[in-house]
Length: 233
Ligand SMILES: NC(=O)c1ccc[n+]([C@@H]2O[C@H](COP(=O)([O-])OP(=O)(O)OC[C@H]3O[C@@H](n4cnc5c(N)ncnc54)[C@H](OP(=O)(O)O)[C@@H]3O)[C@@H](O)[C@H]2O)c1
Image 1: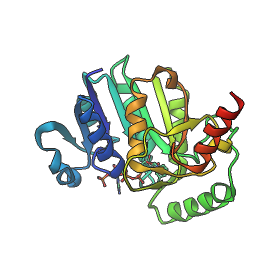
Image 2: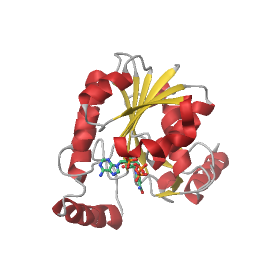
Image 3: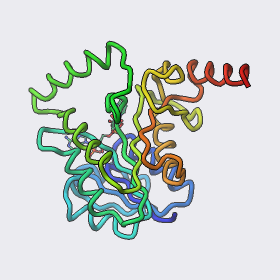
Image 4: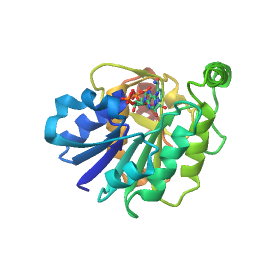
């Protein structure tokens, strides 16, 4: 894999993914809103930027052409199906054998087997309803976007991020298929490591057609799972 495209490259996650991808030697192209191009100045000519909205199919078609992998930040901004429009464009227009990696949060469930705490069961829907009423964010559209991906036969992975914090890398996060699994209990990952996992997924075929929920490998719950595995090994 040589050339990748980052859809939503100017955000926090996008910039971390760019750092990791460049350090691994990938040629990086990306899409971001025209008003955000300046946020990428520090990368200079090491990346190629296609200014535009991420649900603009003409922009996506040009940006993903020739790319072996596409890393997409799914963000449900506004109430005009931004996330699902972005997902549909990437699914339709990426190269046939490209690895497609998408980001979202733990609130997305692939099979309904996730076990959520009160925050994800009550707070997220209430906050989501308020945000939608204010026409700021439509969390249901992120659900529509991931349902499109789950139903696709493309080579996809949907990475589900825990709560995030800034800070130095703690290494590649650990993952599990279902929120509620003990290894994930700490519910915290460094944003740079979320990005690291997204880039790692490009070349980890075990993650094809998976929706890994991730947590920091340094978190107490990941450490406890590791210790108990050692004890029972
Ligand atoms: N924040 C969390 O705690 C959290 C937790 C778990 C998972 N996640 C997931 O992580 C991913 C990144 O989220 P993030 O919160 O960390 O933010 P982020 O990386 O800063 O990404 C936000 C993206 O949305 C774009 N954006 C911002 N305002 C917009 C608008 N009004 N219209 C269109 N695009 C707009 C940004 O582009 P510009 O640069 O142009 O503004 C950027 O590409 C998402 O998939 C999210 O679901 C986040």
